[in-house]
Length: 247
Image (cartoon, rainbow, N blue to C red; front, side, top):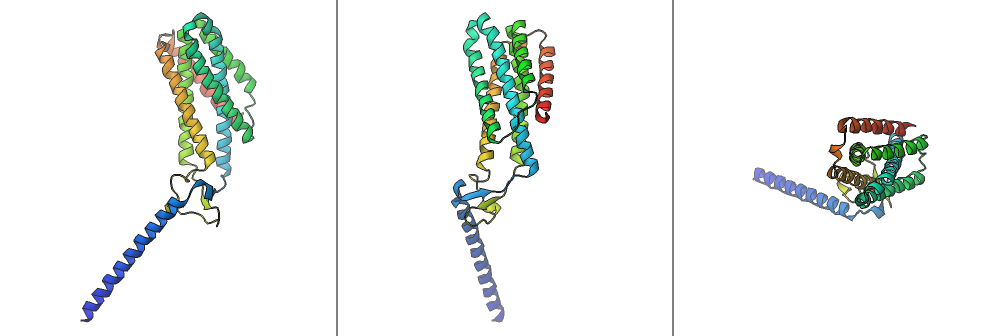
């Protein structure tokens, strides 16, 4: 009889604990679904994170400035020699102008100093654009392949860092309590500032890769000498990126 009572009590205790656990899970799930960006706040970025974001904006502004001026130089030469290419060239150039303007705004908003070598980037970019266009249409397209390959890869690298190294604490705006992982849903896991920056970089990366595809479609691989030309321009672009991040 005693053994039977113990067994019954154990079963009751087990069932009660299980019900309580399930209720706790449901409550946490419901709580997570309740949170939206308007009722949470985010912890401060670390010094390393702030420094990385400053470098991102500085180098991306410099890179888009360079792309803008490269396309400007190419358009000045090729639009006259190859009128049928004007819409293609104008489309790519317009996108680069938009990219450049966007990072200019971000630079002012976050008060990030521009690269000290900005005048050099302008002169060098125009020189690359005009120079390759004067060689041939194919050389200009090969230049686009080289530039967009480097920029697309650079944007991918930035996105990897932003997704993996920017886990910022999230707090209940009303109480100031830190939210648990179970309470953080997809909608609030990333601050609006970082979500916007990731979206911008992802969109611009896709634009750059579209330019690369366009250049390939317009006989970039027929440039002579293709390998020497593209690898040299890639090397110049990587050097410019490294320098713009630091100077």
